[in-house]
Image (cartoon, rainbow, N blue to C red; front, side):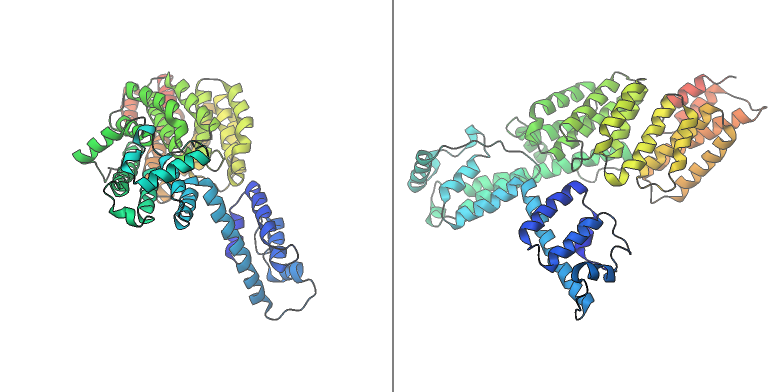
Length: 503
């Protein structure tokens, strides 16, 4: 079977990106050579790369026809290496387009090499607010003349710079580049490049650490993992002094970290407002991280009975999809989609849930679409009290790719069986669910195993009481058992079942 890195690359792209790759390859390779013939064949097979499509003999016939070739397998492998080189060039080109700062640094390096120091200065100054740009006094006479000439010959177009975790590191590199691109000016008393470079390096370090420590604090809330990094008093002061509108990255992550440490509605609404004002200055990854911080707070508030946060959570999800900060490579994750459907269904707007299923389905990744839609449709059936349709959904899937979808499907199955009065099937399903959780320690996170496992145990307890005609029910005792679980999914539903239980 033909095996090459080029196959692995093509296997992991969707049909949209494959079109872009095809356009790129067509520019790089002659349509008459063997490399293009191999690429064309692999493109036609996408995404079905298996023993049949990658059979050496099959590929030989497609590329060479009846032509005899010495060492055909080795020859084909060499052609694959050349195709892979073109695909790697595409990936690099694509990465540079997505990361303009890196592209700009390479361009600035060329400015330095060619002695275009005025262009390099303008590139650097474009990153600083007006009050932080270098004044002419701090520059040598030659530098001032160069800048004045540049401003006379062409108008400076102000660019909007997107901030991300490496923004300050990027500036440090640019300032260092400027310092080493000048000869005698290194000895100038007015040279500030090294001082400013050190400032930006310190900010790069604190910005990177701030984001990482914030993530650790979030993981502590979700998985109970104690953060392994903290800030010194000096670092805290550096963060506070730089958490200003001039540094929206540090400003927003500082407030997100404070919200994670000291949750409160006031901090939530402050961060939400700041994200609305400064969010468009961040790249999508960081904007998405901060949006998820707000969503996590809203979810916890809902679990604590503050139902006004249903609207807050839905608004955050909708905005995150509209501005694509909650999307990954333009695709919605099943986890985000599930949150939206659950939020809308909890507010008993089933028609809206059905509309959103249709609206967002095209945004699901191709390899997860069928699985996600089956599980999400099962949730809608459950909330709409179509219990037979609900538990009937999950017979369509034998093996799950997404772990949360599998757990959600099993959880919904138990709920549908319970509501439909299918107690015999429910007992078996609870046993099967618990067995799967206990067996799959590495497949599911500790938090998932505990929260869904505890749910299964609670449902099993209620179902046994339902089945046993002599079974006794002590509402307070059952509530105490439920409240003894520190993590538990569908707690609202369980409370409702316990309250409605006939003694």
